Each structure stands twice: as structure tokens, then as C-alpha cells.
Length: 108
Image 1 (cartoon, rainbow, N blue to C red):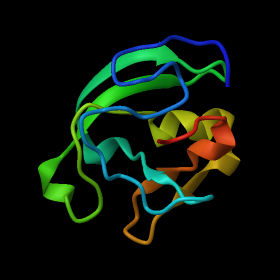
Image 2 (cartoon, rainbow, N blue to C red):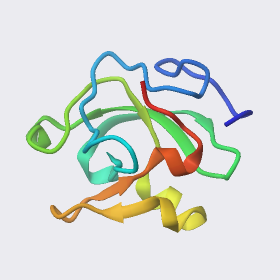
Image 3 (cartoon, rainbow, N blue to C red):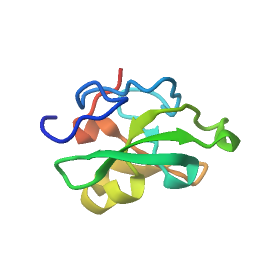
């Protein structure tokens, strides 16, 4: 992916470089927990060319069994669903996930 804003926790739009973050539910087509309800301390750091925001956030500690981390870089599933619905799926827990590979964003 090219263009857009670059912010802290982002290595130039290609990777997630927050301090910690285990929001991944697997690699290769699986998604990252991106439901707004799982997040706190949300700070917008840029915009994706498709029209949704890019953020730094912390996962809420009460959801540590699903995801955890601080200064995690990602999007909000509700915003992504508006412009790229095929990149969003619902986890068995009922929370929304985003497949960042479908957005042209790679995770390291």
C-alpha cells in the first residue's frame, strides 16, 4: 500500500510496530481483532486511501483472552466495513476482525 499518513507505531504504513500486540488470530488470511469495543486510548494517526482512519490504541485488559497490547496500530472494523466489507468478519466471540492483508497492510 502506498500513500496515507505515517504515525508512531507504524513503520511507514507497512507494518504494525507498537510496543506489544497479540491481536492476531493467526496469519495468512486471518484477521486482527479490530472491534472498537475492545479498545481504549484510541488516537487517530492517519487515513487509509480507501477512506477509513488509522489509529494507535490499547486493547482493554478485560479482553486479554482475545487480544492484548499497547500502542497497537490498526483500524476500526466499523469504519472498514463501510468501504471494504469483504475485509471484515465476525469472530466466534461476536467481535469484529479485519483482514489487513486485504487492505494492503502487512504485519511484521
